[in-house]
Length: 525
Image (cartoon, rainbow, N blue to C red; front, side, top):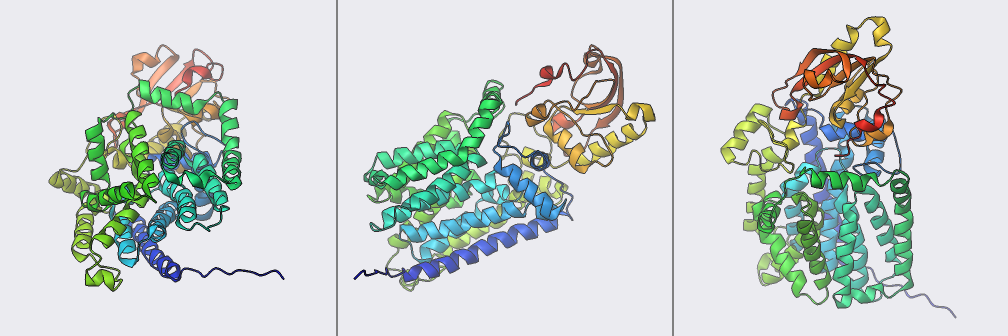
């Protein structure tokens, strides 16, 4: 007679799920409220948001400077919410809520009780880097979702010897979609493999389901690989150009580590650093600590942006909660399994969050933001690229000037004689300017550009007979290519990036057909 063995469900799981859902709801509510409030404080669409929306209108298996998942996200957001700033950013807020949720569940899976879970999720909630990236449409908000889901699939297998190796399928799905989301997933997986191979946790690899999970990951990511091959590896060219062009700020090891402390909020180092020590000292979970250290070393060696490490910290917060819980196991609040068992530390985390919140989320009017940033001396600590910023740090300056640009281009276009309007082209030097025209404009020709994926979308039959051009060139430089050069407008919005303070030209008679000359416009940077 066949018998069925029913394994008891861990009774602490339901409690952990409820607690994680509560903190996730708090995170979601915070971002929805902040985005609704922004309509009253003068902040606009972020440059990249409009670009991703344009990519969503041109769905493909790959893009020059990002993966396809963010384009799908943008397409879904625009379809559901139109131009609503809050709606467009809702999926990013949900991804941020999922990060908090996974932090709590990972803490439970590694052995933490409610005091540890709450401390870990509070740390995740207050980190400025997460508050920032979850507040706008981007791929960055989703990274932790895929990284931590892949990690959870392995943790659950190593937590219980009898756990199903079929969890490798979950790992494969999360890893495959993560690769479609952002190439940084590749380096995380390399670090993860190193962490497993360097410890006894390598035994989790010894199953046929491992092969199935890896095969599934490869199958999911394959269309993007084929797209890269078909388009002659544009992402590698983009990354190479950024490196040789000194696009990003390159930090030394100590400065890079210092930025980890800053972007996560200095007070959280009291949680994630003990978490790292706990992981490295644990025979069961040492592979996770080594994964972090290998990934950190890779990002520093490649001179990556400091926030590229951010998606991995939820597991360190989870481990940090456990470290605190075990260090103070004799404390009454811990023994009673209270949610807020470390009120002083948690109070410090929340107080620091309150101080930094106006710089993490644009909830102050721009002038007040600048005054507050100057008073705290943190006004421009978030810049990651070498382009100089003006009154605002880059992340916030890129939200200004777009509607003003569209209004000026519309004025110039409408002033053209009908026969010139019929053959006019709008050319922008970068994807921000072009995407603003295409997203915010009404009754204008579709703007073209040679910047990143706009180059692949082509010149749309442009001849160059009549061109409204938003470029940083001087008139004498343009006279080499056009018969007539006229400054028809000027972008001079107060808070925008300095390089966006430029002329808008009305050009006539390009000496070489723009479509025939399109290869010279290519700018992967």
